[in-house]
Length: 262
Figure 1 (cartoon, rainbow, N blue to C red):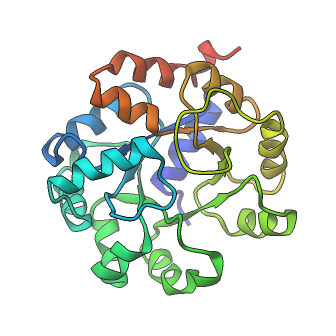
Figure 2: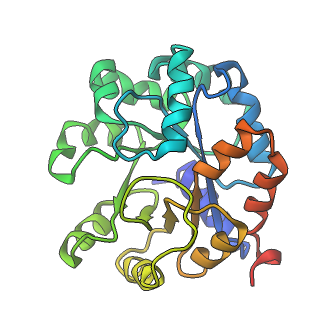
């Protein structure tokens, strides 16, 4: 089987000596018409892939910043169908892999089979579903596999070893190592054990391991990337777009580059 766009992008980044940087933005925050421009900006700034959040009324994994962005998008009536439609219309204008982050309720409402097909038609390479436990995955995995959409699993700091092994074995695309005990949002500092946790997770899988939740400074990008293969940065990216501080986004992405690593 040939490599997916996501797999190739990750491999190219790591082979080149850089760490993987995946920014998160909320689709429709700032208006859906501006989504393509933001994606282009992140691609041109050196992001490896993009995690794109879908606005939802009950986001269990989202901290205050991401929730606020979701509410701004919901106020503009942005739906999952709208986002996939916009991604399909602009598919030819981008090369960066797209990972959707959504919850099961919007997918059920959409129709799982139709959703999976529309994902591939829209150029979606991966999917993160925080409220989908492994025991319930059979509702969706066959449709995703058929359409070559990677189901990316999340590993928690509090997960026992046996659970981490199961998650690491099943994850596709990459393994998302959650670095805080709680929801998303900027952290002043991480627990002293977080490095050992990332290394422990990395030893369980051959796929890239990215640290996420709470990463908000260039120093944290370098710190956490040193233990794994890269990072996912969400709340800080959302804040920078909202406050029009794009130079800070560039600084965060540049911290993942070999020339900037300490």
